[in-house]
Length: 102
Image 1 (tube, rainbow, N blue to C red):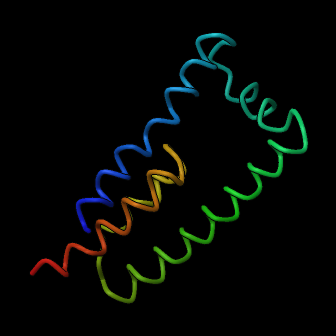
Image 2: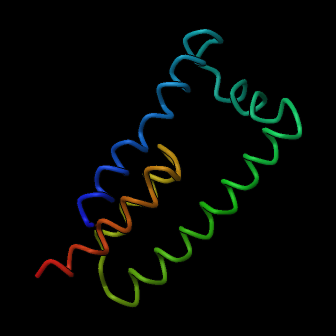
Image 3: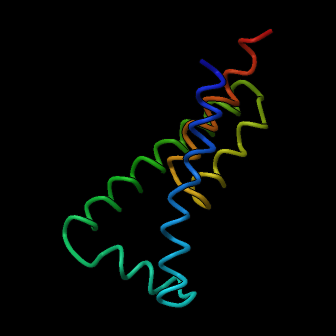
């Protein structure tokens, strides 16, 4: 099962294909992309939903890593906010499960 989470973390990079295409079409403006996220109520709700989930994941990672002194798990935080929740969450589960293989 551990390898499934690693595969999901890698697949979680795929939304960047869409982001890259948007940047190519609209210019490399982060503020422009953020504006596009709020173009209607559906996309605004999705952004809020993913943002809350990303914050919840970050808090879980921080608590778990500090409690277990498992510092490599912290790598999932920049993956979450730099790539996306679709990468950060399975990456953290993969990193956390590495102790189960021993």
